Amino acid sequence: MSHNTVDTTEDATPAATPRPGYGRLLRTPGAWTFLLPGFAARQPFAMLTIGIVLLVQHTTGSYGSAGAVAAVTGVSMALFAPQGGKLADRFGQRAVLVPGVLLHTASVTALIVLALVGAPLWALFLAAVPTGASVPQIGPMVRSRWAAVLGGSPSGTGTDSGPGSSPGSRSRGDASLLPTAAAFESVTDEFTFVIGPVLATALCTGVHPAAGLIAEAVLTLAGGLLFAAQRGTQPQTGRRGEGGSAEPRVSALSLPGVRVLAISFLGIGSVFGGMQVSLTAFAEEIGNPGVNGLLYGVFAAGNMLAGIVCGAVAWKVGPRRRLVVGYAGLTLAASALWAVHSVPLLAGLGLLVGLCIAPALITGYTLVESLVPASARTEAFTWLTGAVALGQAAAVTVAGQLADSHGASAGFLVPLVGTALALVTLIALRSRLAPTVSGRVAARGMSHRVPVTVD
Image (cartoon, rainbow, N blue to C red):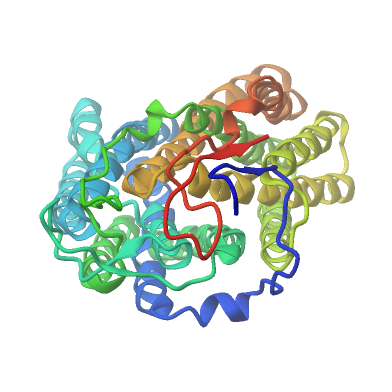
C-alpha cells in the first residue's frame, strides 16, 4: 500500500465473508463461561417490576400505589445504570457486580419488609430508589464481553488492574459475528421477559405475595456472584495504545453517536410501554381480559422471531441504513394500531410490530462497537438499556392517561408518536452515527494504525 489513508464506505463488505450463524457464534472460545451464568443472573431483572406491583398492591390495595413504586424503581435504574457501566469499564465488571448484588439484595429485602409491615408509601419510595439503582446490568456486561472476544479487544484474567497492568490476551474472535451476537442477546432478553414475569406471578399468587421478590433477590445474589466469578472473559481495564501509553478514557455519552442512539431507543421503549398498557385496556374494553396475555405473547413472539432471523443473515447493507429502514418499518407498522378493533387483526398487527422492533434494536447495539472505544462500551450499552426503560416508563404513563380518558385506541397512538419522533431524529442526525475514530486498524496485516474515513 503506497499511502496511509484507507477510505471505506458504510456499505462496504469483504469479498469473501464466512456466513454468520449461531453455531459459529456459540463455538467462540470462552463464550459459554459467561453465557450460562449471564442468563441466570439477568433473569431476576424481568421479575422485579411485576414482583413489586403484586406485593405492594396486596399490602396497600391500590394498583396506583403499586405502579408508582415500580415506576420509581424503573427511573432509578435508568438514571444510575450508566454510572455503574462507567465504573465497570474503569475498574472491571467484577469490582462493580459484587458490591452491587449485595446492595440490591439488601434493598429488596428492605422493600419487602416495609411493604409487609404496612409502612407508609413514602417509605416504599425511599426503598425503591436503591433497589432500582443497584439492579445489576448483566445484559450490557454480556454484550461488552461479546465485543471483547469477537472484536479483538483485550480480555484478561479479570484482575481489575489499572494502567500499569499487562495487557490481556487479544481475542481471535471473528468481528463479523458481532451482529449475530447482538441478535442473540436481543432474543435472550426477550426470552427472559417471557419467563421472568410468569415465574414471579406464579410465586406471588401461588406461594406468597412476597415470594416473587424473594426469588428475585436470591437469583440476583447467586447469579450475579457466579457471573462475576467468570474473570477470564471480562473486558480488561487500563488499555494501552501501541506506543505503550494508556488510552484516554472518554464518557460514552460524550460521543454524538451514542446520544443519537439513546434518543432513538426512547422510541423503542415507547413501543414496549404503549403496547403493554393499550393491549390491557383493549382486552378490558371488549370484556375479555384474558386475551391480553395472548396478544402480548404474539407481539413478543414477533420480536423473538425477527431477532433469530437477523442474527443468521449476512447483511450487505450498512448498519446506519438498516437502522433507518428498521425504524421506518416500525413506524409504519405502529401507525395502524389505533384503528384496529378486532382481536385477530390486532394480533396480526402486533406480530408485525414485534417483527420490526428486533432489526432496529439489534442494529443499534451493533453500532456501539464501531462508535465507542472498548474502554466505554459497557457504559454505552447501559445508556441504551436505560433509554429503553425511560421510554417505557413515559409511555406507560401517557398511554394509561390516554386510555383512561379516550379508550385503548388513543393509547395506541403512543408507539406511533414515539417511533415517528425517533425516526425523524435518526434521519436528521444520521451522519453522527458514522465512525470517525482515527485509531482503528483499517486493514488486516498492517502493523501500524492509520486514519479511517467513513462516508
